[in-house]
View: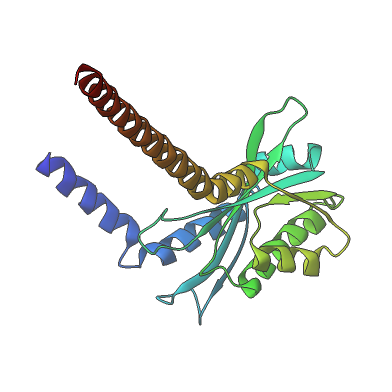
Length: 218
């Protein structure tokens, strides 16, 4: 296993050619972008490609763009965490076909969850629609993130917006769980109290019956 690991590391260093992984990734994407337009990408770095921090990276493969052209009306946007060592949130833009099948249309790494970050997400979505002459989507489905919703309405001001039912159910569960637990604990406490009161009643009745028998005997 160690030999395999060392071999893979040597191949990796050779492919990087003394560049950082991010620089190599961008270089590869730009080359493949110019090769039959296999990728549609937009990116931002602090200064330049060489050895500078990547802040935003938008990627869409041409096969998924073909699906998007045929199914452009509704987009589902979700945020995934902890997908990389840099802890950069990953935005996934998903489309539903007429056969109720899901497919990824675009993905984008962003540095945070501020409104300015989400504005760039929706700007790039609009950019790809403009680039391929696709009519703008009629509906977005998102979670309840206020920054995301504000950015969406800023870029697509006439868009319909629907909250994701999965996130709604998660929020309902999160809100109701402590209430249900409190209700259960209260009912359980009442049941225990009732059981104790019943036991005390029967014990008292038994003592009274014994006392009555004793007095009758006397």
